[in-house]
Image (cartoon, rainbow, N blue to C red; front, side, top):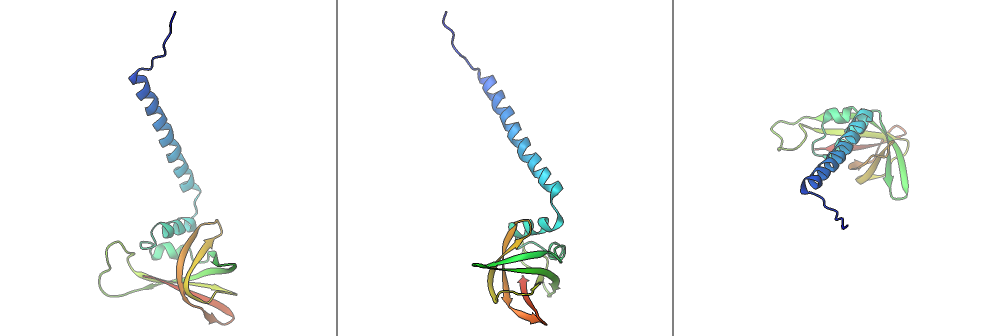
Length: 149
């Protein structure tokens, strides 16, 4: 007796459909789990990474008090975001940008020279690039300011 294996088109499509549902469910549940466990600072940093042009005053204000490590080649510097100041200007802003410019001020006992782009790393490992102006001193504390236009 000769037996042949025969898969119908219907069974094939049914199997592919179930596989797609499994992949979509896995993707959806991992995003849901990440959203439930994420803290506001991580959300702000993730939005900053995803679209630096659109992170606004509220996102950055929510991160005031957070600690970051600035990487500069082989050196690293511990800083804290100490303030965020809106920079108001008359007129309308280009489409796709944050509603208003802002200044983010970071302080630390030791900071790099500034006037260039550094990698900022959050405690959970999230990182983003940010251009900061020249280093200034506030008493014995170094200070860097980033202008986000």
